[in-house]
Structures are given as C-alpha cells and as structure tokens.
Length: 204
Image (cartoon, rainbow, N blue to C red; front, side):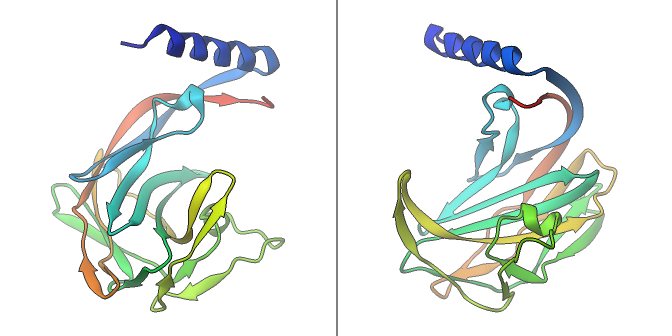
C-alpha cells in the first residue's frame, strides 16, 4: 500500500505536470523482462514509473543492463556494460540469440561494434555527433571516476535494430563474455509483450 508521503509526492508531480503541459495517455505495446538473478529497472520518469524499463544483472562488480525498446516504430535491443577500474570485459560471442514460439524459431542478432556513446545515437544516428567505437573483439577496459552523484564506471554499449517477431513471448540469450578472463553467462531473458498505458508530457 502506498504511504501518505508517497501519495502526496505523486499528487504534487501530477499537479505540476498538468499545470505546465498537457499529459497525453498513450496505449502501447511494451516488453516486460523476466529472468532469474536479474533486477527489474523501472522508467525514471515519475509519471511512468510503473513501466519496467529493462533488466539489470551484476557480476564481479560489473553491471550489465539490457532492454528491448521501440524507436520510430522499429524494435531495438540495448546491452550496456558498466565496467569499474581494475576490471576488463571481452566478448566471446558477438551476437545474441532471439527465440520465439516455444524456441521453435530463432534469429541471430549481430553486433558490429562496441560503442562508447549512448545507445540513442546508435539507433538514431546524427551527422552532428561523432560516435566513438571499438571493434567487437577489443577489450572493454574499466575506469572509475568521482562525480557529483557518486562514483561512476566506464560505460560501453551494444545495440542493434532487429525484426521482432509477432509474438507475445520472446526469449533472448545474451552474448557470452569474460571478466578478467573468467567466463560469464547469464540466464535467458523472457520478454512478455503487453499492452500498457504510458504518459507523454509535452514541454513540461
């Protein structure tokens, strides 16, 4: 049950957003991730915080985040590695595997490069932004730096557009990789496609 302070906070947020901009409810298909050992991460926008954003795994101080999303009607996969100082990550496989219809059908999702820029610029490239990349066989070398919000690890991205099958259940196997030469594998991630109501706020 939501406590009174949390309810008051949500009411204030809603009041501010309604006061400064229209809020548009948008019905949409959304992929809900499920996996053993993973942690659900929710949308950072308070008005959409009921929507799961992706799945986070932790292994040997490495944070690995993945999600399926949509941009301009196209489905994409994002895998983000946060690598602290003293750690190195190397891909053993350069592709993920996508299964549907009870694993009777599958496709391979190839990753061509490792990106050092946010995934948004990968799926929506701009001529005005130079995207730094590494070869998929290069090491992801960790770094740590102190910022105003705490210690931050160096971030690397894999991302690719994909032809998502018309299925309400999709399973994805992430690429195998090593951390300081030790092999790491994660469980299959199940994505369930559901209808949700999200909220789009204009000029708030």
